[in-house]
Amino acid sequence: MMSHIFPPPENLILHHLNLLSVNCDVLVVGASSAGLMAAISAAQSGADVILVDRPPSGIGPEHAANTIFSGMATASGIKIEDCYLKHDLEGMQILSPSGRTVRIPARGFFLDRKRFDEHYRSLAQSCGVSMFSGTVKEAKLQGSRRVVSLDDCEDDGRIDARVVVDASGVTSSLARENGLQPMLHREDIAWAMEADIELKDLGEEKFFQYWIGSMAPGWKATFSPAGGDRATLGVFVRGHGENVQPFFRSFLKRFKAYKAARYRDIESLKIHSIRRGGDPIAVLPGEIVADSLMVTGGAAGQSGLAYSMRAGSICGLVAAEASKKLDVSKKSLSRYEKLWKKEFYWQYRMARASLDTLASMKDNEIDRLVAGLSAKNLISCGSFARKAAYASVAVALSRPKTLPDLAANLMRG
Image (cartoon, rainbow, N blue to C red; front, side, top):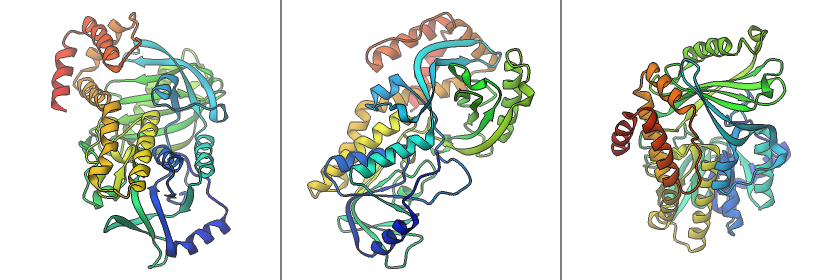
């Protein structure tokens, strides 16, 4: 996640002084990609919207997602803009522990996350969204509204909102403090460590790389070329706690060895910055609505940049419509959950089952699976069900035992 652009200091002072009497239809907590889309969607639907985001920490980027593929963006209704693109990608490669490769052609882009966030902040402001800098302390239900107080305001400063949207990320506690359990398998958050790296011409590669196996148990290690000499390198690990630095160090050695033939000066690779965080890829959304309260994006276990933005859009639309009808009950807001499930539920269920199946496989089994898939076309058109069936046939031909394991994990939920 990237550090944010905030209004000039004098504007912030005015905002804080005015908090004594601020009311709105929809209050969005967190300028995540999902939060920004929720704010934009609600404002475009006629709601009076306020977005509150915590002050920048000053210790580097906070919004980590930096790669998007055209197919996912199109399916999510997200228009990709040239103003925040840094590098074109031709697709992705899946690498097994021994370095066997499956190549999947799929147009994608490395994003300049600072410009990306600025673009959507600007769009939100152009839609009439008011922005405040602050950290939400509590969001108490009073009648049919929520009264929200901020840590850095006076005791009587507050925002009075018909609907509060928690979009403050995977570590958010706001929804849980109000009685919701927005993630079904919170223990399965993939904790990440990602570095911005530099090596001559390294960023000119054209394929995003997923490494799977014991180097990053439960999920992946990644290499994402950013153009020129820059790229990112990271590990996303489930089931080993938040400190994944040992996995990163091990993957860095493996990465250098793999790239040594192509880059003779690989040992001169520089690490400029490191960020840590969580990816709810295998978590699954749980309780994401209550009276006058909604949860979206990472806070709701809705992973993936494009998919979380789409979730935010649905959330904002339903919040605005409910506010307009003066019915912000759980029953009214549950339309958001129904619409989200209709579009994405089975994709997330399949993703969790797939990762659980992968986590149960030994490195040599993964090597054989990837080797068997390397000569097959894994791309198909049509609905999610058709794509899943097509991919399942390819996997079954390469490793028949995978499908029963996948089915068992899918039933387990």
